[in-house]
Image (cartoon, rainbow over all chains, first blue to last red; front, side, top):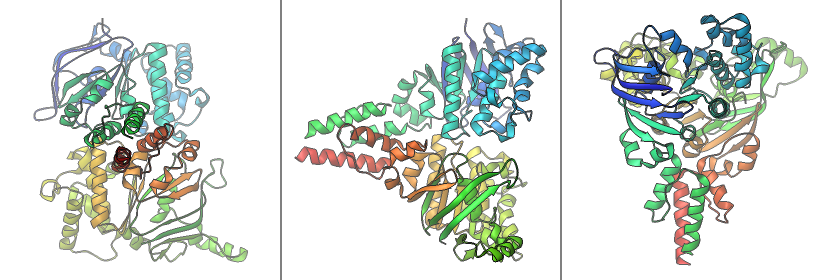
Length: 276
Length: 305
C-alpha cells in the first residue's frame, strides 16, 4: 500500500485553463520526494489535489488505501498536511499556541489531547519557548515553523511543502529544511517537497519534474540534475555548479559533471597538476 | 545622484518595550552609476536603510521639534544626501525626491491594485507629479515604462493586472515605479520567489534598466551568487551597522569573516576555497565566467610550463 497514489488523474481549471492531462504517481510511506518544475508547470495543482482542495475530474487519488472522495475527504485531510508559500497567509490566531491548536480544534480533538498535540508539535519544530509569543512578531522562518506545527498537530502521515521556503532568507530556509528532514528521518513522515532550490531537492530520495501538468522526468535528484539537455527543454535552469563544470569541459578540461563542490575541486586540481 | 549617509541611526518604537535599534551609526556612500548590492540577515537594518533613501523613513533632524531641541545641545552630525536632496533638512521636497528615487518593495506584485495595467502604471506618475499631466504625456510615459520592462503595451495595457502571469505582474509593478524615470532605482529582493529562469530574466531586465533608464540600481538580496554575478559594489549590514563596503570581488575573499557573521558565500568562492586547500590558487572576480576563465588560464599556463 502506498502512502499516496495518483492513478490516471486528470484535472483542469475550466475550459482553456491550465490542465493536468494525466498524472500517475505513487509515493511510499516514509519516502521523501522532491517536485521540480518551472512556475506554472502544475506543481501546486498537484499539492492541492493531494488533500482535496481541488477535486480530480478523472482517475483516483488514494491515501493509505482510502480513496479521496466526498465521503472520505475529512478523514484524508487529517492525513495530508500542506504548508504553503507565504507565512503571513496561513496564520489564523495572534498567539502561537492558539494558531497551532486551530486545526486540531477544528477536527474536534478533545481538550487534553489538543494540549498534548501542541506540546508535541511545537517541540518537533523547535518552537516550544515561543508558545505564548505573538505570531506577528516572529521571523519568517519561525512563522513557517509555526505553520508546520499547526499541520503536525493534526498528526498527518504525509506532509506537502509547496515552496514553503521561497519567501525565507537562507537562515529561515535552513530552519525549515532541518525540521522537515528530522520529521522524515525520525518520525517516518512521508514528505513531498515542492521547491526551486537545488540544494533542497538533493536531500530527497527521489525527484520528479513537472512540465505542462505532466510528470516528465523521474529519478534520484542527482540523476535528474545530470540530464542537462532535458532540464533545459523543460525550462529548468541547470544548477550553477553544473554550468561551471560544463564551461570548463567546453574549454578543454576533462572534468566530469558533479553537484559536489569537493568533488569538482578534486577534478580541477587533478587536471591542473597533470597538465604541468 | 550620489547617495551619502553619515552617522545615520534609527530606532523603531523608541521608549517602548518593543524598542529596537535598527540602524546604529551607519555611514555609507553609493556612487552614481553603481549596480549596488546590499546584503545581510533579516533584521540587520538593510530595509530600514533603503527606506530612508526616498524619505519613507525620515530623519528626526528633518522634524522641527527635534531640531529645536538639538540646537540647544549643539549641531546634529547626521548627514543624508541623495544627489542635491538634503534629507536632513526639513525643506526637502519629498515628491521630487520620490520621482528621482524609485522604490520597489519585496513582492511588488502584491501592490497592484488598479483596474487596468495602464492605470496601475500611471498611478505613481500622477501621484508624484507636481503639475497636472496631459493624457498624452501620461500615455507616452506608461507606454515607455511598459516597453522598458519588456511588456507589450498592446497586449497588457487594458488587461486587469490580476490576469497577468506571476512574472508579468512583477514586471508591471516595476513599470509602475520606473514610470517617473527615477535616477536611482532601489529594489528589495527583486528576484525572491521566482523560479531560477525567472530570476535570470529579472536580473537581465535590471541590467537593461541600468544601462538605459536608471543611472544607479540598488538591490537588497540574500543571494550571494546574485550579488557576485551582478553587482559592481556591495555593502554588508549586520546588527544595524555596515561591516563591509567593498566590490564583490574583494568582499568574497573575506569568506571567513562573512561566515563568522553567519552569511553564505557564492559557489565560486566556495570552489576557490576548496581549490586553495588543494594548493591551487584561483584569483577571480567570483562570477561564473570569471572563475571559468581563471581556471582555464591556469591550465594554459601549466600546459606550457
